[in-house]
Length: 73
Image (cartoon, rainbow, N blue to C red):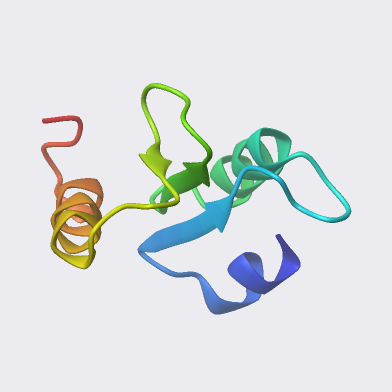
């Protein structure tokens, strides 16, 4: 999370299963510190996030949707 805060990205991609923190909690913290950043979480199969097996074309499309001011689409 500290890296996201220091880099201030438009879109943050991270795994739900982080070694030291729950990814959902980290996404909330990032959102609190960087309200204009969008976070996409990778997981093994939950609805509403990208699966770890996502194809590169789908990942690029999701990043573009997340960065869109009209999110969610």
